[in-house]
Length: 385
Ligand SMILES: *Cc1c(COP(=O)(O)O)cnc(C)c1O
Image (cartoon, rainbow, N blue to C red; front, side, top):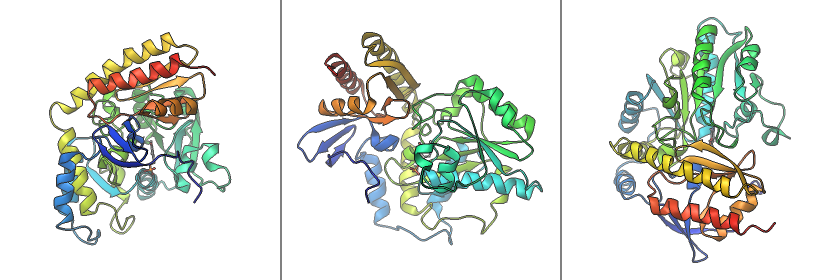
């Protein structure tokens, strides 16, 4: 179907942060399949674990117990605020589960009139009808009306507007700690803290969509850890499977109270193949030195991006994000910057607000950072409109 504006480029194989194109060229992958291949391509350990599982068992359905799923749930719970986990196959489904969980929680508590969720302008929560309605972005909604009701959107970073939007029908606040598709706008620690306070004050559930910013991307396993506050519900996907489709919705027992047997489900969700890969991803990410290394790389990247903005103010005007989730807001069209970077051998992705996103695999080394920054510098220096 013509629903994707595809770049005319395909790849034969990948190795770590590199992709080898069918055009015979080598590309440094700072897009990671949109923040998915967090451990790079063809990671030896992930390959080994997946291959072993492929020879044993692929799928049985959630009619039965799935030991790999129980193990992953337990590990994610141990590594987070959550008490319980639900598995699906994509970010949108993880968000959908969160939305349904919120509604059901208040229904079970005898407050079924409380079924609305406050969302943030510039948000992206996926492409199902509920997710585009939650995201509230015209470009994704146009032609797909009627919207799913139940979402009230407020301005990014604006607590006054958020407070004013709370009514007796409000059940939850849904927010990306760092906006992904919206252009790598990071919420401040104070803002996230205030959300927790407001949620507690009004008896709302706080839901974080960490589909993009979670799984080590910011240098902590979950981006909200930087703020010191925890949500009641969190959606994960993208990096969780390192390239295998898998998603999770984590929650406290209290928030998940309504999702009793038979109320929600997925045929493929949490199957042995996906669970094996996600467990392997966790094995790597929970190694002692993994996340500190991501943080260190992010801290090296920041001043160098700042320097690029200072050096090329007619091309770039702002650094966005943190950790290995940083980007440059462009003065010139971001898609053109992306194209010129690709011609130099660097793959990036674009985002809202005219941003070029850098989403390297978390396993990159400094020489690759140097290569990427060199490409950015060359493209900016050689710009003739
Ligand atoms: C990508 C993304 C989604 C949707 O994930 P899909 O796997 O494409 O359904 C949801 N929320 C955020 C923050 C995302 O970045």
